[in-house]
Each structure stands twice: as C-alpha cells, then as structure tokens.
Length: 136
Image (tube, rainbow, N blue to C red):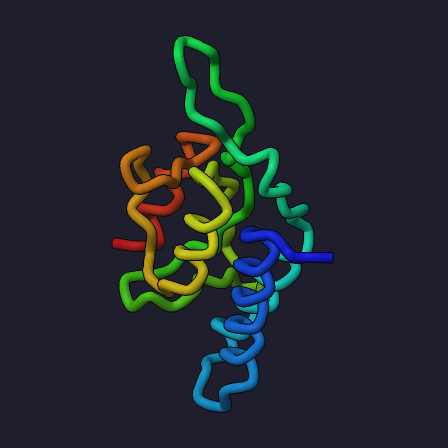
C-alpha cells in the first residue's frame, strides 16, 4: 500500500521528535514536549490524498477540510517548554490550518504567534491571558 503525503509528514515528524529525545544535549522539558508531540502525532489519521481539499471549479463548491485541532506546548521567552510545578507541560488546544502547519510548529521550536494568517489559532481565546503571564 502506497503512503500518502500526510502519512509521510507525520512519520518524518515522529522521527524528528525521537531524534531530539535521543540527543543528550536536549533539556528535560524539551524531551517531555517531544514525547507529548509523538503521542499527539500518533493520534492523527492521515487524510487520503483523494479526499484532500479541492478548490471550487466552475461555481461548484469545494470539498474536504484540512483544518485540525491539536494541543500545542507553550514556550517561554527562551523558547523552552513551560512546565508547571507538578512537572506537567503547559498546553493549549489550537486550530491549525492543516497537518503540515502543525508539524512546522513542532519542528520550529519557537513560541507561535497565534493568528489566522500564521495558520494557528487558540481554540479558547481566553488562553492568551494565561500565555502572556508565562511569556513576559
């Protein structure tokens, strides 16, 4: 069976996360974040290429939806994942434009700028208040 585009992206992202975990110079918080992302990525069911979004043609509506809702690890000003005193990661639910955007933010390792133009929006707009408290 031939793998589709999203499945290949997800497998490459899992490999990226695993390689960061295996690197001895990676901080413990970053290793927790990468483990978290591996679990999140394994939950994604890749969309078959034949069902990808198609743009409308000749006034016929498009179909398919690439948008996904996944958890995102909040990072501080030094781009380190934020952990609470109990050791849990500070995560928020976000809407991502598509799987490749989600993977981009995982691999980027920097705090995201939440906006529709960047392809990432907070699911709960009140989360931005909590994020600002930790990232000042």
